[in-house]
Image (cartoon, rainbow, N blue to C red; front, side):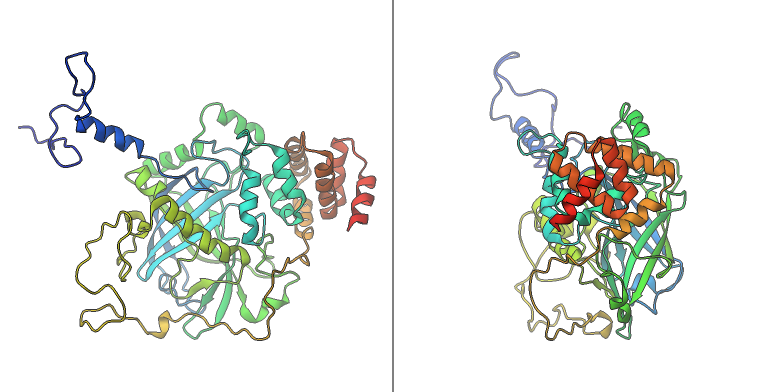
Length: 493
């Protein structure tokens, strides 16, 4: 007996022949009334959705976060209250700049985005593999992406465009020193670190506020590729990291990360030598040590790549009670940009897609819109109302948000030029071994080939400001006189 399900068209009618078009005679023209043909072709035409403007090339997996230390003294977030509590997660790894189908061994920032499906709603945490980012203000992000992406004229990556932008923003130097050093090409996803970079607020039940950064450190140890190793891998595949991730999951070699936070008490916010919300800088672990709070384990390949890895939508503003946004200029801009990009890619009802839906569903009076697949009933589509079965507000103190006190503060567009853009880049350079310094210089010299003289000199000056040896090595490789460059740009300040 044949137990196979009948193949149907999009209206549910069983299909007698799904491999041949309806034609006039065996070799005659095709008829437009062949709705089975037009359905298949039309669906193919519409299979693709807009790709992400950033972090387009990626792969995801399901897993679990286990709390290993109660953090109730710092936050009322339900999934961090009890040691041993487990929370389902979806994690998406990605490259930052290039499109889908591009290489996974390029020198580029990697995304490490996590969706926690907690009992009190979804918590999205947006991480990257470096502990710092290029810029500290979201106003600069559109221009950053334009400068990093291909030319609007030729669609080619042109170093002159990227380095022109970097040369006007010395705040990018710390990220550059990480990216062009040994940290620039993660070997794979399962041995990749994740850092929140942005600072978040934790609130406990007493209303106390703490500022936190998250760090995800792979239990297998972080691994990186040299330029030569990456080139060898690229000869065989552009999807080495995805292959590695799914091969390990298939073989039940489940990757794990230890999860840490650094915690800054609100009263100490103004005691830093720089503003602690600056996303171009790290927090000194000697001052604010890492505290382990849990373990992240990936253990499941999603059933369908598009449905999960492509349609998953992250929102840095998706918080649970006990976690809130800090005043970070980068974070607050991304809290608009991410969900707005989600609406463009997936439509207004993207939160109802399976991979994005909270455990307990979504309960409000927002309605309709493209691809609304909910079963909405009744006359009442507004709040408040008099219905006995109406939704209600939860007025528990547990769900109250932190309070802001603002008095006598000037509203303006502050450039934050008082920040030291060179000290931490210099510290990082000096922490490199002699071989690592040579690798950094080699990578920078290769990347700067062909850029215009003013751009090159400006960057060399920034390297010098971080550490004189840093600048001298790059200048020497281009046969430029460092002293003349320093005199020129010192006088321009």
